Amino acid sequence: MVSSLLPRRPNSRMMELHLTGFESCPLFPGGVVADHGENPLAAASFQLPACSDFDGFQKDAIQMMKPAKGTTTLAFVFKEGVIVASDSRATMGGYISSQSVKKIVEINPHMLGTIAGGAADCQFWHRNLGIKCRLHELANKRRISVTGASKLLANILYSYKGMGLSVGTMIAGWDEKGPGLYYVDNEGGRLKGTRFSVGSGSPYAYGVLDSGYQFDMSVEEAAELARRAIYHATFHDGASGGVASVYHVGPQGWKKLSGDDVGELHYKYYPVIPTPTEQEMADTSAA
Amino acid sequence: MARYDRAITVFSPDGHLFQVEYALEAVRKGNAAVGVRGTDAIVLGVEKKSTPKLQDSRSVRKIVSLDTHIALACAGLKADARVLINRARIECQSHRLTVEDPVTVEYITRYIAGLQQKYTQSGGVRPFGLSALIVGFDPDTGVPALYQTDPSGTFSAWKANATGRNSNSMREFLEKNYKETSGQETVKLAIRALLEVVESGGKNIEIAVMTKEQGLRQLEEAEIDAIVAEIEAEKAAAEAAKKPPSKDSLV
Image (cartoon, rainbow over all chains, first blue to last red; front, side, top):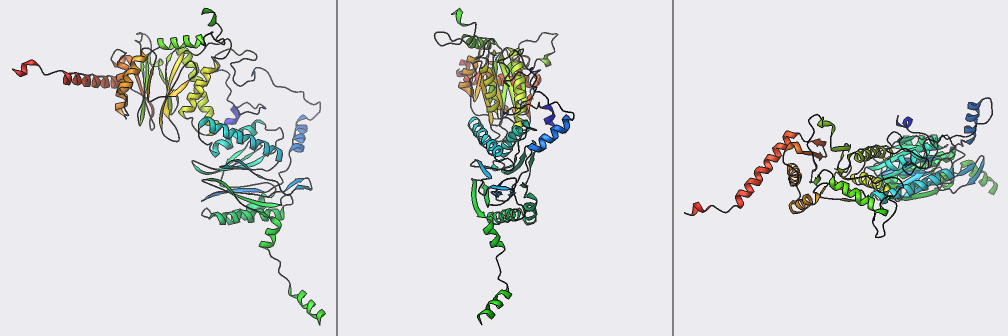
């Protein structure tokens, strides 16, 4: 695959192809001609810790840094565009730190991203992606495609691979080729698809989403399906809860459709039915 | 004046960058090159100086492709051209990798021009001594485009343009005779412009046509000879029509 050709270097810019061998002028230190800005001749290095099992130590360190993605987000493509939905709970271990986190970020008026994993990581990199998309628009006089935007993000995350970023995001948008949906994560993976759910509540959401999905749904039907899927995930998963937000991305851009408290949704879907025995007891006490 | 052309990072008192202007001189001494944009094809033509008998002419291709849908012809220092072309080819592929889309003509022109500009604002390097004509079809819109860059790093889009030796005469000819053409007519217009300054014949002209379906196609010498013959015939017919009727017929 292509990624094996590219040098893994921690830098916050896009990956570049290895250009040594094609340079016309000899590289000199601080060379103005090298357009990567780094001297490729200098070897990157840092001190290794003194321990017997370095590989094991590395694995433990990564496991310690790798937080579980406690959330439920989902997105799917259908006839009228893309529906993006999420919960709004943030947890720190067993402590619920917030019930009102915005997990769907607006990259630009035609593209949405979802947050799962480290909130700071996701918020920062989505904002950074928004900047890059805007710069692309200004330079090329046309909006960036969903393919291009997701690839920019995936390349950035890949260059930070192994350094503890926790990002499980979906990029949803409508560009010249129609609705587009990509899943991008901190491992550097990038998948194109029609249905995704990310987070600890995703198995529950998939259950509802997959069984109710049809390509030919109306916007309201699709939104209701997404809402139900989020609700059921929040019911079973402790790390998901708060408010179920549903967005729709159409040819004119995205629009927020609803934000319902999942507690209220519970009583809407499963209203309380008073049992007959209680009424009898009340009657006898009156008599 | 001589003091201001050694290190090009220095402006002259009257605002000139002499190295850049000298580079333009090098371009003016280079072989003639012309580009004409039609509705469904873009034609690049280059003057071919006489090949020495022992040289393998196939290794001296002057019109090259940067990607399947972009081609380039240039006038000036050929060695500089080779380096610039390699960098542009890498950028075309890099763009495909990072945004999963082929480059637009404007993007790659901007990249090449940016590269040329970088070398006018650095220490210890000299500018690229070439002007490039870049043609192609935008991958999404399918619109044909022709751009020109020069050693200063400026670029602009053209309907038809010429660079290199005697480019002024060619440009004058194009300004007088340009109209929207398609297919073979575009090729003829490009050849007619080149013939203004170049000795006639397929041996002295290299022509390539870029179409959306077939990409870049270099014309064979025989094809060029045939079109040149057509052009000469048309010219002769036009001359004959203009001549006044001979006095004999009045008698």
